[in-house]
Structures are given as C-alpha cells and as structure tokens.
Image (cartoon, rainbow, N blue to C red; front, top):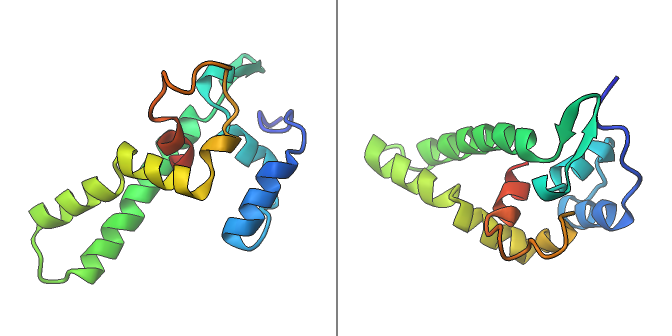
Length: 128
C-alpha cells in the first residue's frame, strides 16, 4: 500500500502543472506530497508524509542534470568552474526565486504562519 493515495485532488496544483509543463501529471498524489511542507505532515502507516524525502531525491537528480548540462556546455572549463556554476544554479536561494517566479510558493501546503520562518520552503518544493 502506498503512502501517496490519501490526498484528495487539488485543482490548482493540476492547473499549475498543466500551464508550466503543458500537461497534467498522471499521479497527482505524488505531487501533492511534493507540495506538502513538513509543518503540515500527516502520519500514514507510521510514517510522516511530507516533501522532505522527495526533496532529498530531487536534490540529487537536479544536481546530476545540471552537472551534465554544464559539462556539455563548457567542454574546456575545469572542475572548479563547473562545481561553482552548479552550486549557484541549484542553491536554495536560486531555486526559491525560481519557485516564486513560477508561482509554486502559493501552492505549498503548510501550517498557517510558517511562511516567513521557513525561507527555503519554495526551493525545497522545487527540488521535491
């Protein structure tokens, strides 16, 4: 049994992905979890359900994708340059700004009053 089946449909989230990606993902329950901040965790089958585990996975995937892109784009640049560029691109600050520009931050489910206390909320959701 999956931990991702409990969430109900979220029309705003579906519309967001349709506008950004051009299609609505099939398994929206996974995206609901990706947009659920730890301050609003639920417990299902003895496990906290929020975006932290997906954030961990997304961080690794995003880092690898950006690394490959930079590696191909700058074939003559050294490891130090590539590492610095990747760090800037995948930083919480950069991802948070991108999440805000895309309108993602408005869709993150979180405990009321926690918007200011978790500055990385948008970047975390972007990774998830």
